[in-house]
Amino acid sequence: MRIREAAPGDAAGLAVLLGELGYPDVTESVRARLLLLAAEPGSFVLVAEDAGRLLGAASASVIPLLHEDGNWCRLSALVVSGGNRRSGIGRALVTDIEVRARAASCRYLEVTSGERPGREAAHAFYEALGLEQVSRRYLKEL
Image 1 (spheres, one colour):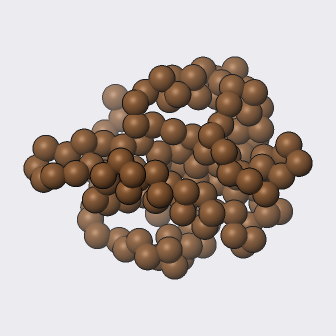
Image 2 (spheres, rainbow, N blue to C red; image 1 turned 90 degrees about the vertical axis):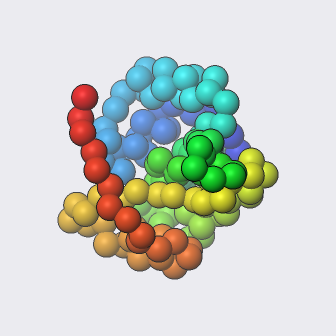
């Protein structure tokens, strides 16, 4: 298994993984967003693959802070395929993101996770990685 930056050719596999995460999508839409993220400084999408098959993915963005020195790294998506969970792939993806975040002078790594049923394992996973629940999140759909 290796972790690398996602490429446009990964769009079909990413669409399948995003569907497992609860965000069903089509390849063309994923490819378009992947290209937008690739053009955005500080944003990146990583994939975990084995023998050309995508096993997991993560996306993150570095956000500059106004209120203090440094940056913030927001982990916006993390998914490991159902048959490969609990095998260290998620931990490897997050570790790679942490390395990139530190190199970008980030002070924090943030991940948001809803309170939907079935998310308990994800919450336990984040806590096992040393993340802690620290605030509320407010959201308005536009």
